[in-house]
Length: 582
Image 1 (cartoon, helix red, strand yellow):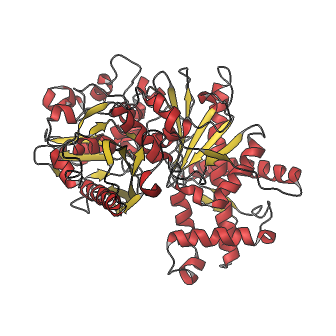
Image 2 (cartoon, helix red, strand yellow; image 1 turned 180 degrees about the horizontal axis):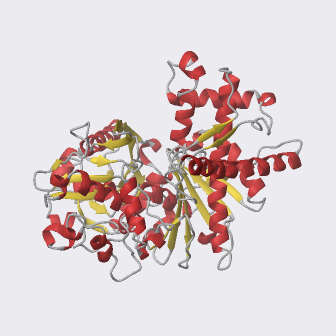
Image 3 (tube, one colour; image 1 turned 45 degrees about the vertical axis):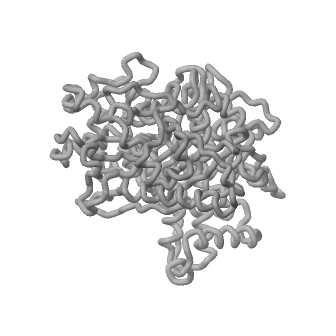
């Protein structure tokens, strides 16, 4: 009998799942990953862009992924695989759900089934500013300012715009990962299934996990949300009455209702399937990477994991409570016990590259029939094949500020906009590729900016980052990986190594799914701690080599100059804003 866990990764635009071997973290069924797309609603309302999702749509996608995995088991005659636990990760989106009617509660002006405010939605700018004006002590642990991407601003927005939803105590508010744990056990008691993860609450709800009184009662009072404190009926709506739970802890078992919906009932009807406490998707990816060794004995505190995708998250651990301006955290115990976590981020990376190519005239006229993935592949191929047209300084006349969805780190400025300097009227493939390359470089400079900030603020108490570990879907973009390798070597120094998931190690190439599998393995008792699981199950990595050039000194000087321009673009934009608002 093969003991396995079911790992689920709920991203922005898809749900993915796999059965994972608990012994070494390898994916089973021939390294098979089941995938199902999910819908993101995007529309404008009162000059504001709204981004929403439906929990019904996401749950349906999870059902389809699970059914696909069971069918794969059957087709491969893998009847001996025994699923012992389930754990998942998800984006930090806000879910509204009625726990009495078991129905989603729409928070949309356009879609009746949209009960999720997507993590990237900035509708709660005013509410975030209001919270920041309180100067509450919890703000120190989110880089000095709460982001509109966090949950308290969104919760306050719902109170302001949908009072009928706010005033109904049957309507509960969940981080998406916590909601899906609830769904996995939905026909059990409310007091059990509304427990919240230490990862979601600390990172997104201004919960201070290092304090005895983690929930900041006085902050809720200052924000006019004291109703949540008045009774058990109200405070359980956000988990105030529950003990916040460490990731990987067993919180219950899969309900019969969920087992039937996920096509797991017949396969596991004799056994109970443990449910592990969840975490945010980026943190699961970091967990899947941190135990990697590959011959390098580097302390955890000198590693930085970048989860590369729609957005990028930069995650570092530290033993001490060290604040870094503009970087979220430090968060205590959210990943591993006795470690503080720092989180830097870029709100728009893969999605920005999508925007750049989809809006270019060459794509609109010549490649309009291609999928977005095919367009990226063609651009990568073109730039790599036409190397003579793209020397290291090809983008010296075109510069991009990639803050199209604001800057999360290290500037904490959600009001800043993106900009491009150096556009022409040429609509050729070469012109598109040049803009694409300049955008990729700007995203790499943003990463350098984050790492510099972390190193600067931690310099007196611990050594700098020396190992950067990459995972996520954006690694399929060769140009991004190549440019990041070049730019890191120039601006961070040759002693900083860059490693990515080793695609040659079959079955251990997906950090998010492996990270969540670690939580499941802990939940069913296969490992005594999450840290033990990381030592046995982490993915393998390979060194990313810096592209060669005939004139290394000139290339180094080029990137130093272009990085200086990147920083000036932000300064200039703030000057423009000052002029226009005088």
